[in-house]
Amino acid sequence: MNVLLSTVLGLFLYFPEDKSEYFPAVISFTIFMIACAFTMRWIIKKSQKEALKTKELEEEVTRRNQHLKKNSMH
Image (cartoon, rainbow, N blue to C red; front, side, top):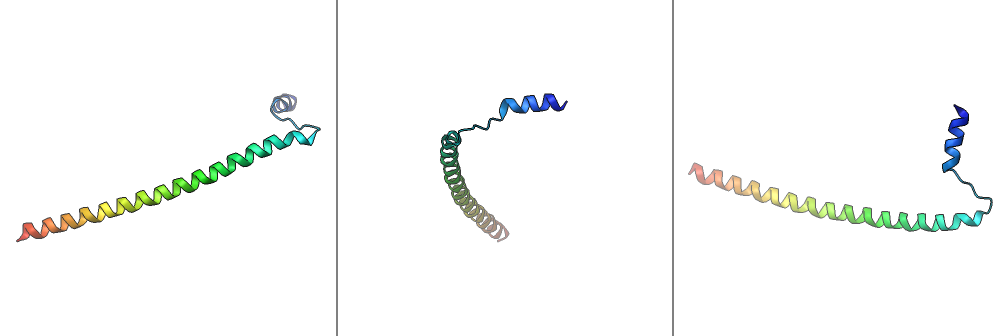
């Protein structure tokens, strides 16, 4: 079982002797992490704006309902 596991993992793990082979991976990882951070910030800002719009709409509907209740009682 251990031999099979180490053989399968050996197919996916690669540790190069020449450490300069890590540079492209580090560069692409950095680019993607920066892109992820900007995307996450954009999603959070967009979500906050949508939450504010929803809250305003909810307050407007509540005011209309209260107004209609007052008018129907008179």
